[in-house]
Image 1 (cartoon, rainbow, N blue to C red):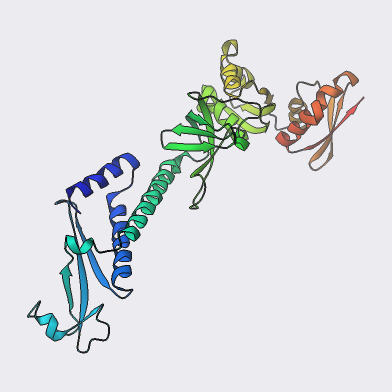
Image 2 (image 1 turned 90 degrees about the vertical axis):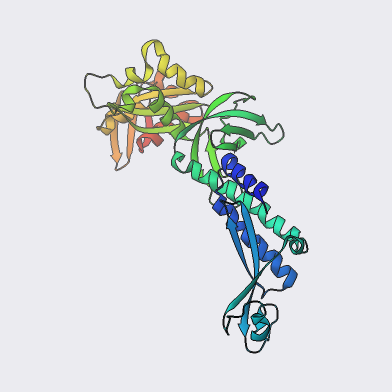
Length: 341
């Protein structure tokens, strides 16, 4: 294992982010496996990598004993003294394994361990790269679309990853070269499956988009109190202004609708209701039922209420297939019973 080998490890570290020390440890393990296959499970050996001189030496070892019971790992004192005159019982004798002898080792076993180690190292490096990105918004480029499964391969700064069909916005068509925003929901520590779980349907995706587009949210003047979402169809987001002179809804919409339009464009036209939060539950629930106009709200239990609307507002308050009231209930965390006057 010469300079070319160490140069390859350096290149691997630069391109994949796998430390040389990690790979050298794995290679030592691979060589041990090869030695055991060649000589037996009791064989002793030592690997001595020198990164400065770019050399790796391998030594086979024996323990000096009075009576040899296992010649694979033991050597008599008499034989040991032919190698080192000043040796004694209990000492360790070692001989360097030369290149020609290395060829006799089970190279396939070592090769498999090294290949597996590279994969594990790549995965570990990628996990560490994503560590501080959990529950954050990330920009990705679509590099491949699998027409059979619907899954999409995304190119991120940290490398390639999969956006599964189930985590894509329903009805959305992605194309190669398209730049999209994704939300990192989970880092997978298991050996199988994708390194991370990326999503475009998670409610926090909308949350992060508002943080990105609205400076008043970034500086803490406007606070997001909650988000309820049915991806591809409708989202309700509750916001609150800590400054009475700042209109929270106006800040989220922006001049000439620029801010909200940028968010809608990212969500493929998904509708968004911006709800003004209130500490008074009746006011908050009435606002959450927008675009319907609510006449009154009465508490009927600890987390239950009745909302009264005019007959012409009933279908609007309930929404198609109950979507509007369902999202309002998720947002406010109240069970809402809608009645007409």
